[in-house]
Length: 144
Image 1 (tube, rainbow, N blue to C red):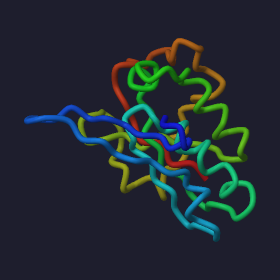
Image 2: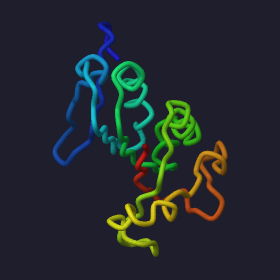
Image 3: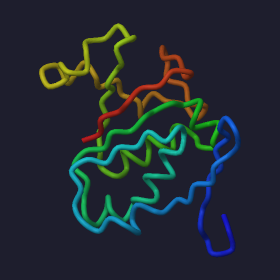
Image 4: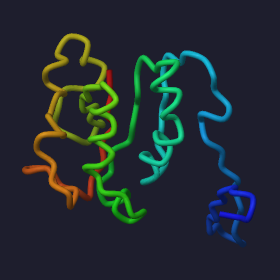
């Protein structure tokens, strides 16, 4: 954070680092949105907090959010807080497992939506653990 209130992230890359300026979604989007996707390596709650006005005032039909408890915790975010924010914003989330998981392919969720509702919010504890689920893994959540 600089003296003007601008947030910067620094990424270490081969051959040096790169400075990236960030902005709040609310500062650039002022209309209804069909889909908001965030896969920001543990910064998903920050993105959604920066879109709180959009969610409340203009509406977002669908959220597609990466849920990776260890990445969230590494960035100082309680995984339960992310889920609580999403659920408190009026969404219900469904798991969209990847190809390496032994679940039906994500393309079938229209026929079998109940197979992807794994009830994160009621079961997650504040260390990012969901019983029977490895917190080192990640999943994409489709929130409607």
